[in-house]
Image (cartoon, rainbow, N blue to C red; front, top):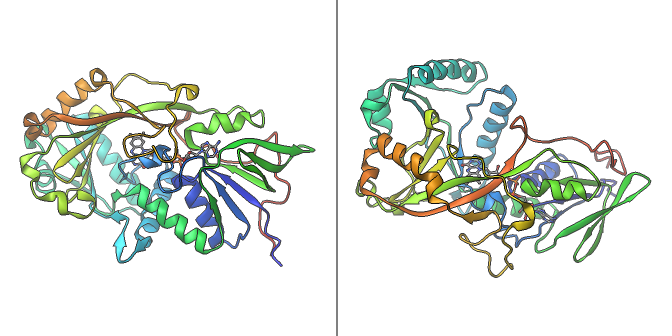
Length: 361
Ligand SMILES: Cc1cc2nc3c(=O)[nH]c(=O)nc-3n(C[C@H](O)[C@H](O)[C@H](O)COP(=O)(O)OP(=O)(O)OC[C@H]3O[C@@H](n4cnc5c(N)ncnc54)[C@H](O)[C@@H]3O)c2cc1C
């Protein structure tokens, strides 16, 4: 008989679904994932993420995690269809300082095993013909970067973990954690209790709410981040048929805190250049499972066009064909930010697991 501890994971976004999958791969057998949203579109940050996977990061560990993610996403397929397309990543420099930074980046990713190349403006234009070649001083090209369909990746992870015995319960909101003698005993939900030896919060930007259930302060702030899709642009005509709607590399313009991907005939633009937009968790929109859709979910707030205006101007300078386009759809999407930008991982100092956090059977 299995003596695997009873693990309850709170949240079935990309983190919770991956954790369940990784635990089963390591022999854990007694896992339940509780998700407040419907499992097919939970409504957290993962449900609206455009799926860019750049591996270059100044932290060796984060770069290695990103490379692991690329390998893992490549391994997830169903009916011959992938959920990740290795289109490459291009980060361009429009200032001499950024070009120097790209040289530094090439140095560290190379030493950490990620292949990349510094390319001149002509080659940048070859990889990304929509660029204004004269604005670009050079670029860092990483062929193994790419574009995921995040929601599909979660579905494939849920299927694989379910096949390995994990129980996923959607439309089940965790409302508390019951403790006995300073150790977890059960997770309390709006649909009864689930006994637990180990509880893992993968609640994303709802983390502070879950932490508060056991009196824990979680140093994490939900902030909105802007993302838009343009109207169709002539240069991309006919691309709606492409898998995941993209052929060009994913593009980063860090001098202006911007990134880009194709959505068929449209361009998607993400911006970090706006004012900080902290979000009050008590004021999130709420939807029933039936109401939830790509455009209606708790992690998607109304677009504030005035905040995006400088990013739109800059995007039209970098990609001149956007001068004939408009913003068709935009939103202020919520996700988590910690003081150092890293993840929060580890056992609570206040509430212990009820058994050693490793399987023994
Ligand atoms: C506009 C935008 C664009 C982005 N683009 C990218 C990108 O291109 N590439 C990239 O890598 N990242 C991107 N991100 C970031 C990325 O979306 C997040 O880092 C990631 O999705 C976080 O995953 P998660 O599983 O931690 O959180 P979530 O996906 O939010 O999952 C947490 C889950 O926990 C559930 N939950 C919370 N509380 C409870 C409770 N009490 N009971 C039960 N369930 C609960 C929620 O319903 C939710 O489904 C983007 C973010 C935004 C906002």
